[in-house]
Length: 327
Image 1 (tube, rainbow, N blue to C red):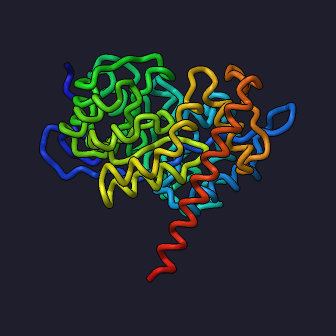
Image 2: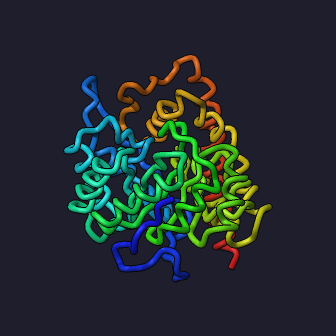
């Protein structure tokens, strides 16, 4: 493998150095709401959605990711989405990069930097090869051109790339500007356990929180994902940090039927958007092709799961008020 030269800061990646790491917690992956038959970006709904994430205590936001349908947005629409996230919250931002090739990825990052400035905590770049030397060269070129910190995403369902955990570890160790890994190649808990034992940066799970409890036990720093009740993910991670497994399990358990329902293959995006619409967090649940539309045959199931989740959230709020009032 060709050894990369010193990074943009002049550091030799082979030499031990203190690593910067993305803050633990829940980084909400933000859906991009559309409206009407023309599926224009609904900036009003987007502002309400990102404000909700800040109000409930998200650590940060991930915008223009796979579930933000970034690949279906124009460059101007991506700029508008990023503008709203900046204007409507004070949260740090991770911006997803759609391109797998180096030069287009650099162009996307520079466009995001021009809008986000210091609010840009990192860019999320997908592993673009199974070969670690190719990934390292890709990330190194990106960092040299932009100076951006990187969240390395392993999401073969979206990228079409399957990379071993050992190759990911090599890439992270060589690239001192990688501040987190997002591990979304099942079995995620196995990969996360191997990653957290070998690297000094935060490792996050995704996939709608389906494996969150096992991922936390494997050493995950939290979750970087979307879910129509992100309050549950935040409560779970906080309970884990404070009191461990049983407390985290109790927080997440009432929502697990909805977590599983939302994360169904091929229709997960449409299901989540319809759930967000029913919650009143966005006005329309439209998705852009090639995403599949919401299957009406599943509406009864969805409404059942949403009722249970709403009851769980109401119960949790009542318990908090009771606890506060007892002092």
